[in-house]
Length: 64
Picture 1: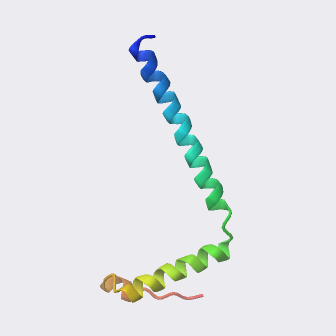
Picture 2 (picture 1 turned 120 degrees about the vertical axis):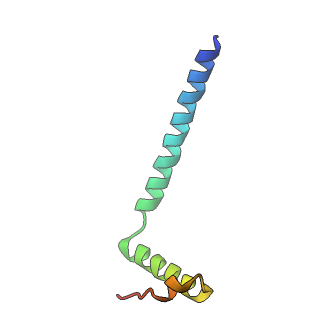
């Protein structure tokens, strides 16, 4: 086999692997309900505020 065929096959394998990873991540993302996403975002904001991540995090207000 010529070197360009090997490079082409390696590129094709890389594209297929990347597609599989993206599809898996998309399936995991879609499993969350809107309430779960909202709860996780509220947790992250609360953690950022308690960690003292910066002055900007103190200005964030969360309303439900």
